[in-house]
Length: 200
Image 1: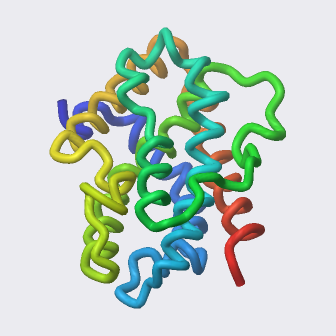
Image 2: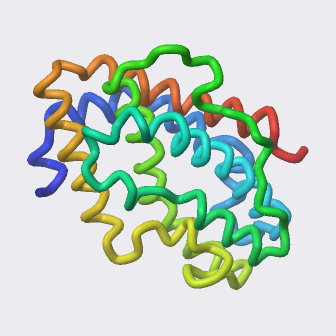
């Protein structure tokens, strides 16, 4: 199923989160990762901060979605970041923070799906980053950049499967506002985490 068939909610979701998405992608660390001048130190910093985000969502958000997202176990990614950091000769730990969930107490499944929308969507952008990291630093999907390789040749179809799950849940539970709130919250939380912890 293509994304057009899943509209109009996806159009509404994209429009409602566009500014938060742009703000995150405009951060210095977000722009350098797709710059041919990126260094291994900058790449490592990005991976470490993303590890915090991914580990937080896998530990605290995934359990809320076990009965909603059927292929959830296939979507874990922290082990890829750990492998990449190891290949870079860096200890595979982040800051041990919870950049997404630390201020959340009770959250709905719809809000959790909004969080997941941002995390899963990053796999699409990861393909662009992978191309740059391979060209600039020599790391590839086999070693050093496995996280950005995403789901390989299945990245597009895996994303569409998630969008189908998302829109089905939205239509069945009238959860559009919760999903949008969760997505915007997550873009902003990652933005704050990058802004506060990126190397100067």
